[in-house]
Length: 127
Image (tube, rainbow, N blue to C red):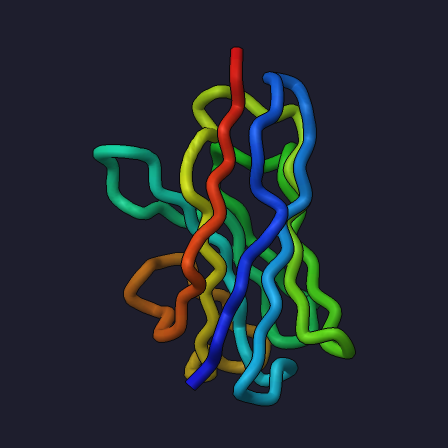
């Protein structure tokens, strides 16, 4: 079982930036596909970004393309989400997710593809 701990959320003004971090433990990190999801009040959890085992492949939701960037450091068991040009509609709880079943170059873009989840970190963007 993989344990995931997110950090880096907070309150920021529209147009600002935040960097989320997620630390993984419990399994060889380099064999995990990783993803970021978010959930706003009253809405379903939605895909934000995904990255393959060694970071060679990434994918983003259309709503964040060009503003957000996912990266990972396998030596530190960390995955990051750099968020720029934040908008009020980016306000949500952000979750880190991991799964070992997604293959080497694969990407998981749906909630059902991930078996391990962090507790979430709140991101609030004020207008």
